[in-house]
Amino acid sequence: MGKEGNEWVVTRTGRAPSNIAVIKYWGKRDEKLILPINSSISVTLDPAHLSATTTVSASPAFESDRLWLNGKEVSMEGVRYKNCLREMRARATDMVDERTGVTIRKQDWANVHVHIASENNFPTAAGLASSAAGFACLVFTLAQLFGVKETYEGELSAIARLGSGSACRSLYGGFVKWNMGQDVDGKDSIATQLAEHTHWDDLVIIIAVVSSQQKETSSTAGMQESVRTSPLLHFRAQEVVPQRIKQMEEAVKTCDFEEFAKLTCADSNQFHATCLDTSPPIFYLNDTSRRLIGLVERWNRFAGKPQVAYTFDAGPNAVMFARDQEVAVLLLQRLLFQFPPLPDVELSSYVVGDQSVLKSAQLDSQQDLQTIPVPAEMAGAVMPLRTPGELGYIICTRPGQGAYVLNADNVGLLDPISGLPLQLHQ
Ligand SMILES: Nc1ncnc2c1ncn2[C@@H]1O[C@H](COP(=O)(O)OP(=O)(O)OP(=O)(O)O)[C@@H](O)[C@H]1O
Ligand SMILES: C[C@@](O)(CCOP(=O)(O)OP(=O)(O)O)CC(=O)O
Image 1: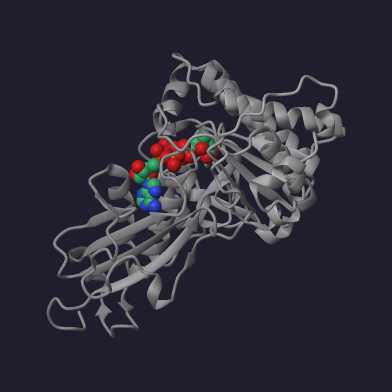
Image 2: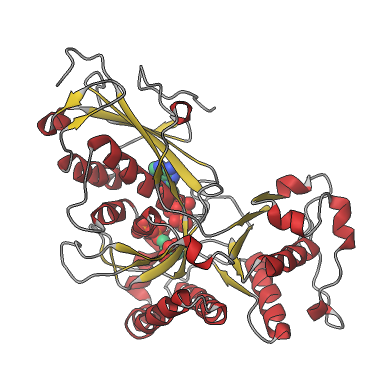
């Protein structure tokens, strides 16, 4: 190593977004390598609103590999962390750290431990794909630290996949496909970008957060049970998804919202049908989720063509796509009409993320909610209940870019001298 002694610490920070699948991954053909039974397609969410930020440091002074998640130390003994770290270390190259002047040779990396600190700017383990953002960010940032160059396109995504399947899609921005692949070693089970987020920049994404509580059945356990017991899942993977993947690729390519919306809703509903077809059945949707589905379906039918698409992962939160800003305003009005915040909650803390939709709707405070007209499709119909507080909150966002490096000096989560977390949260 270039410098004598144990005095140096090299550090890198990166950010990676969460993603939402519009053609779902559910079921593995290989548990260890995390190889799926079908391909999937996702939309990357704007990292400004849903992302993980990770700082990684290496120093000969560190005694072990350590990880702090949202300020709390967690074990790195889990097989998924170990697999990602092992694969990244094995690809480390000679590197010169410009900031410290330290030179680290390829063979030295094996004896140097890492400290990792990561924070999510949204709830962890609440069905908002924190594991996708987290593992993508870990692999991406370690690649910066270790100077890893891909030897084939998608190599980093195949390593992120070892952390969590859906993580492989979070390295790229916009619209992303995870090819299920054929190889037994998983080398071809990688993510590829279908289109940048700027390719279809009309889309607005609104997430109705029904619950930020940790769910009962994890995705990992749930899909294992479905593979074991659901005949519908196998029919889906073999007969339905291959066709839908092609149709969705075409819909993305041509920015065909009608087709995109039909496929997205149908695929979410079929995924939840496979959960119900699992023995014992798994229920990720709840009454609020079903009321949200009703709201969108009623409106789409009234409008004569889809205005909004909905999709639900392994939890009750609805992710809705509005075809453009104008429709996003109408959607937000409908959500606030049916699901207003509790009286003591500020509107600006109830609707978070991209504030432009709230502004376009000319809604500044709770008082303005009284001015929202009864949605046209509800006139004359049985009025749905208005239930203040039924939703936790609403996130407005858009399709966004993939993982990127954060270079500024003040963005790291680890002290550049000690390599310990800068702010320990209680
Ligand atoms: N920023 C992060 N860095 C590293 N690991 C993370 C990070 N965020 C989450 N994780 C890992 O992911 C786990 C949460 O994954 P889990 O699948 O339970 O929830 P989720 O990803 O939020 O929900 P879902 O996958 O259903 O959308 C955490 O316990 C942790 O192990
Ligand atoms: C419903 C899903 O969100 C399932 C995601 O499952 P995970 O990627 O969290 O599962 P593991 O690979 O076991 O870590 C659909 C999707 O994202 O495609």
